[in-house]
Image (spheres, rainbow over the protein chains, first blue to last red):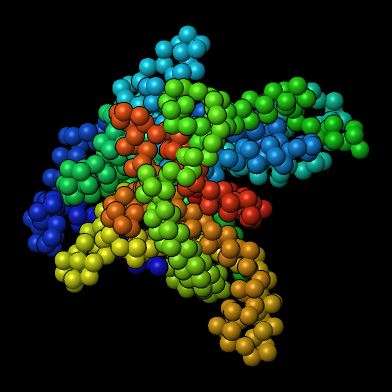
Length: 276
Length: 287
């Protein structure tokens, strides 16, 4: 088990230190040793730009999905006729595979696609969605469409942990819905939603499928996220060593939120260890 | 009764209706368009119709010759089903050991199980690719481009996830059940097969289904580790979608039909196992 995790990681670290390309790949054990040169080259090339795009994209997408997720959770918490159907609808974008979501949006966002046709009827010139500076916002919008149900699920789980006595107490106090929401209900959601944000940000940063299928590889400069630049450097430019160095750097960036998440989770594990 | 349900109401009715309608529209309008476009003709979609001039299922018939979809679906099903079974079985056994025995490094492994799910796929792909291709160069075994290679690659991701799902479930099983079995003189494998597995069947199913979905939804590994004969539905669909652009008449209706067909197995799994799966979604945070 540990072997499966450790061996590839160590190998990736070694690859990042050697000059590995399509010629040396056949005999990679004999490839020349470069030391940290790959890392130097990575930072001199497009990597800092890719880091900026990835991180800003992930944070923006996460922040934007939170209101949708919480609103959806609040709206489906109380039972009403047809709620089951509404809940199923809310899960649709999440259940659809990423590559399907990306393919259909790519088709809809073509210059002569349905989105521009509808916009043109409203008198708006949609322009190009899949190339140029607007592609960055396209990526964020599609990610929001696909990812908000995750926040919804986590918020719903949080809402279900609220004691019904809490509602009754605040009802007796005659609290109006807004103060009740802000003072009584939302504090219960802070924990689960923060955890959801952390996981969602990690998922956004690591998302390769959406930009890859939406824009193809190599992607326009404005959507060259970290997984994209690593992929293009290795499997199109065939500079495997350089690409491994980039991948290691992206791991270090992901490690920050990941570490926070594991810390938050550690409590569970310890609890469990104590109980057994 | 009605007073109490009124107390539980979080949003005033008009707001609740507005929120629900907006969110449903946001989801359903694109989905409805996809469905309508797949039932339209390629010409109709290209001319920008939202509502088809005439309905036909022609696109669903054509995709089997224009796109490499049948082959892709067969490959996806074969590889993912195998990943699902292998990681559910191995994951259950690993989880049992992790839950019932204390040993040094146990906590590290548990944390590793969770951490591994967030390691960038691109980082794992490189060493996996180099290892697989050197198996070809040094040992003379072809791995890159075969279904077995893809199976192995997916297993490295699916197994930690399945194990984690099983760990969270097995922790909740009372030990007394096993101890009763042990008093009767049953061996550990026997306890595992006769007591643990039947009791944790729902969790085993969930961990298997998630392993299946992990493979089904992957594009990254499949785009590198397959050749045309072994490529998965995900790669086939992406390739089909992207080759339509710039042509004389893009067959967008067929793209939509192919997209829906590739999504169908996943949607079906969710519909059948919905109750179990939603809990698992929040537990692991993996799509």
